Every structure is written in structure tokens, then in C-alpha cells.
Amino acid sequence: MKKMYILFGPPGSGKGTQASLLVKNDGFAWLSTGEVFRRNIREGTPLGKQVEAIVKSGGLVSDELVMEIVKDEIAKMGYPEKLLLDGVPRTVKQAEILDDIAKEFGYEVYKFVEIVVPEEEVIRRLTNRYVCPICGYVSNKPGKCPNDGATLEKRADDNEETVRRRLEEYHKYADPVINWYKKKGIYVAVDGVGSIEEVYKRLKEALE
Ligand SMILES: [Zn+2]
Image (cartoon, rainbow, N blue to C red; front, side):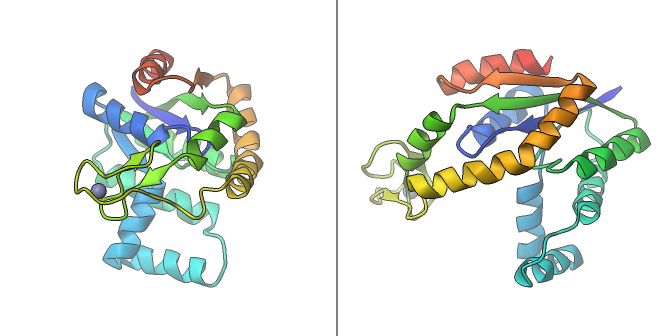
């Protein structure tokens, strides 16, 4: 049976980096809802326009619409064998809809993996971040970008107060979803402290 894997983690958990490695080395297909939203808005698709209008008016994109987009995207991807979901589900309602989609498309919702990073470590990582203004290269040290030589800059919103607020927001939506998957018995925690390679190794074991 085809399998769905849900990748979860707070900002600064290295989720994106790890997902790219899993795609590159292990045959996972990656569905990032953030990326799908941005792409649709950029390309001005009917969906993108719908989402943009909702966001502009200060509203929230409904669980039903989010999951409709996910469903659509899975079909567009050609129903990959190993599907890595990133960005959903963010609510229990979305998790329930995901179960329905899985059933309809012949998937098992196989693992829910959370990359766990202590709050102080997230703050340390996100407040020590230097970003290239040209290509987006990220480093934990100030200096020049290895790609284009531009001076790396600290982003204004990478301060402790903002990071703490983002973490609070994360726990607000994440905790109920995590508890829901714990009850289902498919929740796995992965220690996100360590080198990229170390975390990647743990993650691969957890996804088996
Ligand atoms: Zn650069």
C-alpha cells in the first residue's frame, strides 16, 4: 500500500533541509503546502486568487479548502508511493479530512514524525541566523555569501521576542494535532539536536 508520512516540527527545526535530503536520497515525494500556496499565488491560478483574497481580507483559509488543495496536488503528483506531507494537517479537522483522502486514494497514513528541538535551542538557532539578501543562503555566522559574495544580513524578525511568539503559535496549533496522532499510535518523536547528518539518520529510522 502507498504510504503517507507527516513531517512536523517547530520553526528552526531543520524540517525543510531534512525533507530535501529525503527527496534526494530516499525516493520520497514532498508536498509542502506553503510551497504550493506560494506557487499558486505567484502563477495567479484560480486557487491562488482565492487564497490571496482570503488572506488579504485578514481571513483564514478554511480546513476544507486547504485539504482540497492537498488532494488536488496529490493527484497532480501522480499519487507517489512515499508521500511526505509538510505543512498539514494543522488542525484535527484537517487530519480527519486527510484520513478520508488517504482512503479514497489508497494510502495508509503511516507515520507522524515530529522533529523535537528544545525552545532555547530554537531561539539560539533563529536569532543567530545570517541570510544572503541576494540568493537567500543561510549561515549561523556573519560574513560573505559563498555563492555571490554579498554581505550576510541579520533579519529584523529574527529576534528573541518574535521567535518566542512564533513558537507559542506553533504549540497552539501543533499540540492538538500531535495528541490526535499519538492516540492513533503513529506518532514518533525525533531528536532534532545535532548535525544535519545525525538528525537525518534518526529521521530515516523513524520513517521506516
Ligand atoms: Zn548569496
